[in-house]
Amino acid sequence: MGRTRYDPELAKQVLQLRRAGVQFDQIAEQLDLTPTAAKGLFDKALAAFDPALNVALEADRLDRLHRGVWPAAVGGDLQAVDRIIRISERREKVVATPKVNDHALRNAFDTSAVTSDDLDRDVDAALMEAGRKIADRVDEAVATGEGQEVTKALYLVPHMVNVLREMLATPASRTAAKNAAPAQPRQDGKLAQLRAIQGNKPTG
Image (cartoon, rainbow, N blue to C red):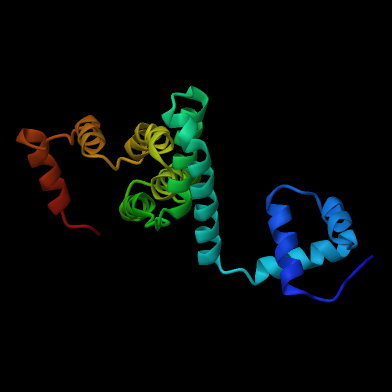
């Protein structure tokens, strides 16, 4: 007992057993190893494993499960039908091409923050950080999420609009702020003439 020399085939067995949910002490007992040696073989096998091959292996495993359940599903077994649907959903996620997070909303928010003349970078730091958090969450969900998860993230968009409104970074908020600004007093008539005369008097 306690084989420690690296054996690729033995490491592959360890990897497959661990993926099946078998604990390292059980793997060690089954393969005549120590738990430490089993863990070491697992780490080496995992490090040497090709991610693309891993995807293909997982897809093949799901295909075999699909074939095993299919006859019962076609025969009208509702539990088998449900299992087929779950296997199909899992396979779709396994083989899907990863999306790239382009940070589009975060970049747009940062542009609004940088170009705003009404923000105080210190006083409004919490406001800007709240907007960034919302933008990051939406970008992440759009890039990595599916259906319902993306929809939930999009519910945050109105909160971001509120942040932008506080920053005077929406057309409506800028118009409202302009209309609410106090009007400059008109300097015309006799008062304006008097001030002009006083302004032109020589000093000294």
